Image (cartoon, rainbow, N blue to C red; front, side, top):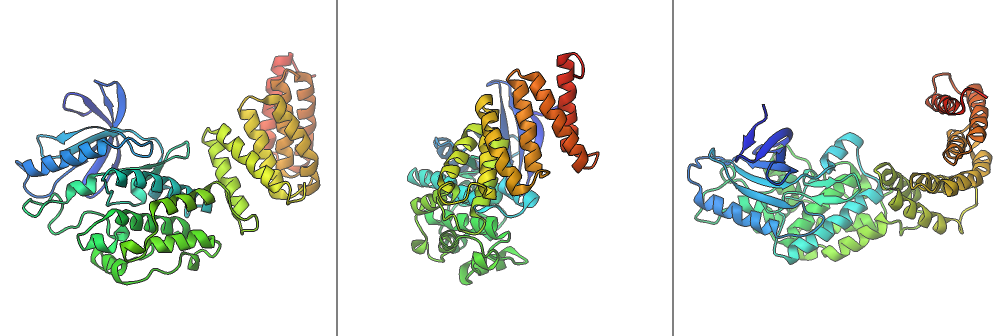
Length: 429
C-alpha cells in the first residue's frame, strides 16, 4: 500500500536519500500530476519549531518565486506532524551530474562547457532576484534527456542557516553547504553570490579532471584546504582541456570572491565551448562535438542535432579534404537526423552521396559503410520502393556474411529487415 501525506500526495518511488533528506516521486491527486516530494529531517528537538518553520517557508516561497527553465518549480512546502519539513517540486526527468560521473566518468569538453553556460545563466537570474544557492555540487545539478541543465535545491541551504537567536536545523555547529564545494568565505559563515561561482568551479573541475580539486578524510580538513591551499591546474589531470576553459575553472576557484569571474563571463565562455566555436586543431575538439551531437540525437532531439551537425559540416568542409574521417562522421550524423525528422528522400540522397567516400576512407567492410548501405535500403522501403530495398539489403546481407561473424548484430538487423520486406512482398523474391 502506498504511503500518502496530507491527504493529497501519494508517495511512489524513493529517488534518493542523504544524511538528513530523502526525495520521493509522488502523485498529486489534487493537481493530477507527478511531483517530487523532498523531506528534511531536522536534528534535535523540534516539537514546536516555529522560527525554523517560518524561515523554511520563507525560503521556499522565495525559491518558488524564481521563474526560470533551469530551476524546478516549487509547488508546496510545510511541516508534517512528525517534525519533518517538506517541499513539493516539479519532478525533473534525467540524471544528476554525480550519477553521470559515476556511470561514465569525466565529461567531454563540450558537455562540461554546457554545464558551465547553463548553470551560469541560472545563477545570474537567481542572484539578480536575491537568491544564493549555497550548496552547488554535482548531486544538485541535473541533465534532462533533452540536454538541459537543471539546478536543484535552491533555498535549502539558506533555510538551514539560523539567525543568531534561533536553534539550528542542522547538526550542532554544522555549516550549511558541502565541504568539498564550499568557498572559503562561506566556510567562515559569510556566503555571498560569488560563493556559488566557487562551487560551480569545483563542479567543473571534477567534470573535466575526473577528480575533485581537493580530497581529505574529513570535512574540517577539506574546508582548510579550500581556504588556504591552491588546487592543481585542471590540465595537470587532463592536458587536452582547452586553455581558456582551464583558466576559467581555476579563476572560479580564487580564494577571494572579488577575484572570481562574473557569471556573464562564465556563461559566455561556456557557450563558446559548448556550441563548437573552437579551433579545429584543438586536440579532440571535433570528436567531442560529434559525441555531444550524437547524444542529442539519441535523446530525441534530432532537430537540434541536425542543426549542429550541419553547422559543423559547413565549418569543416572548407578546411578539410572531402574524405576526412571526422567530416564523414558529421555527414552521417546529418543523414541520420534527416531520417529521424521524416525527411526520407533527403536522408537517402545524403547516404548515397556519402557512401563512396566512406568506402574509400574506411574500406568496403567497415561498420560505417555497412550502416550506410543498410540505411539506404531501409529508406528505400520507407519510400515505397520495396523490391529495390529488398535487392539492396540482400546484397548487403551476402557481403556481411562474408566479412562478419554469424552472430554480428548488424547482420542480424539486415536479415530481420529482409524478413519483414518478404512478408510485405508476399515471400522471397
